[in-house]
Image (tube, rainbow, N blue to C red; front, side, top):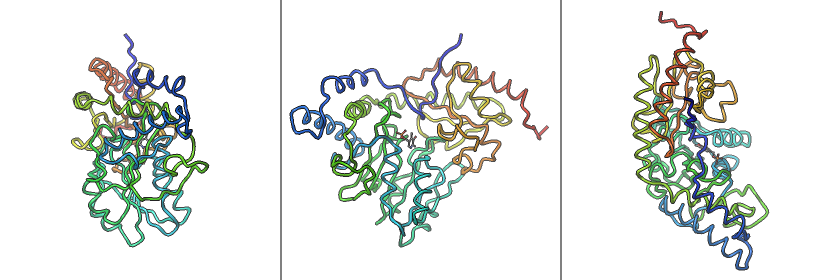
Length: 378
Ligand SMILES: *Cc1c(COP(=O)(O)O)cnc(C)c1O
């Protein structure tokens, strides 16, 4: 029997039914503009501030340091655009495209950028970071939990190195999965997104340390403490807050156990390897390379059998370029091409994983039989 199994939760997640119900009220009843001074407006503003408070509490800060954006990408753009000509930025070779491409764009505007290497598990070398800092270094931006290979960087150690330098992290994948404490990590900026944690799409947040001035990107209003113009997405922001409230410690633990089970079973398939770190890994991320197989073929065959996975990140899966993250951890192109990401959520069941394991084994066997790739070990 064919099952539908969604294992692409790092791309996006299903919105929780409770959240949809709550959001609906903000379209039809509490539809005021938070900038309006009448009762409707004040009520909308109170709802925004409740969500702000929920996010702030989660990262151990105050609500006047949280601004709402259209998502993780905008938050990342806003954070990096704090830099001006002559400034130096340090980032890594394993960032999400919304950091990577913003950094490339900054280079064209006269900002110097250093892209740190990572080791074969995906960790940044702290000595290389220390050595890269110079008198013009204004910002260090390092992803917390990687969206492709799940590796979790030691932000506490990195924060200690970033004394007198602004420190930003893309915490979109790690938010609500790992504890984030902006004080302990010495962060000045941090990006979050709602739709990776069962909230609606098109909503995100940026933590901005008190006193820090942004280079405003959307002009036209004094919303969000004059850091981001435009009427706030009230239903979305309310949904984002509710999504955080619905996260349970128990779910995180259970997802991690399912992850370990799936890793163990998939690695029983000959000539496979796990990418990223075994221990410091997002609870829902699995990235496996299958030798002698094209990842695109494996993904499409699995899709026909109802199993939805991804090759590399959703953005790079449109192109034929191998993932820059897999290249950065030293995989040869042909192995990088044969890599698949399975990402779990609280909705994932053991039954779905048993079905997935069976289908991956079938498809891998079939594709290897007809593979044009040479097995040079025989
Ligand atoms: C999804 C993702 C983003 C982008 O967030 P959007 O809300 O989709 O714009 C940024 N960084 C990481 C690590 C992500 O996984």
